[in-house]
Image (cartoon, rainbow, N blue to C red; front, side, top):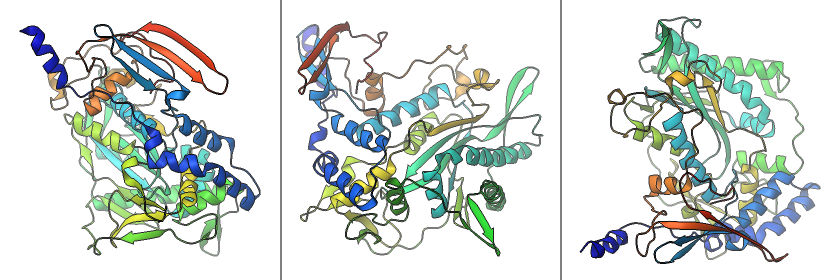
Length: 481
């Protein structure tokens, strides 16, 4: 009787099916038009794209392709096998690697970084000229983040009735580089502890503060703008003349600069339609402007939003918020081709005037992809205050044991944190996010005994295979999906 129940239970599981990137619109576009795009850039700008952008496209074309390497998992009971292709691990526009990084980052932040206290999201957006400046000079983002965090942390400390020497705040900042229309839009998502820590009798004590009002937000935004403009002027990136402020002449990359400028302004950089705006489709009637949230202010092209907040026990909501702000730039589900062979990108949310789709030629779309690739060694996640890596209080306040998302943290005993949290395995991520079970055989429900790491290159005929035990304690290969 028990033998009959096991296959039925196994049949109800959702099992992993290998993704096939070669069947997606994004992969086919890059594969077919990449060489033409590179030649177009070199012809019209007189310079080639930077090597890191070319490597991003080349790695994307290898991502998920079995011919470039794979894992072979074998069931110990029925000898059923499944193949798992290697991935590119890039940060630009690969939907698969971006989704993997999104789930892994969100799980890490919730389980090992953000303490079980209220957390508020602060979103700071910049005018279009500054978006382009930060794209061409990413080294400016570090001082900009310092200015922003200092203004917000000072406000929180004063709200708690303390002095800067008595308390500390903490934050995690996600630098997001894209908008819904695959445009280049550098803005900051700051997950800020909604309060401050003060050391009392040798122990850190959290002091919560009330939500900021619209008036307080307006004052904070003006303070950030004043300090930011002063900093950029002092560094020579802004010039003030006769009461007007404008960007100084910078020296952007000859090939990548025009692509980034066009992607910031919703325009086309190269080709017969260079300088024109991309075609948009309005399929819904013009909508009335939604009521402005009470905690959202705008000034001189800047905006500051602080409406979203997660309570101390809302860990599930916090993880969803972390996934949202770390999501990939491109989603395969929102890309399609029309009868004329043009790329139709569906917006995540319709614009107020009714625009729901953006239409571009394949080469115009690849221009957008190239502009979204971040420069090497540019950290897109930053930690501040008590959450900084070397902060003295961090080991005492970070969460130590994963808990149920809907259970208050007070019900769980604290234990000393591990020296270094282990990375979240791919199998665990699939089960955590998509409820896909890769650790059990889809045929009999058994656990795979081992995997065979195989790499094949059709150009050289090179082949390598090695059998290793498949268990949670064993590290998976470096290039696993």
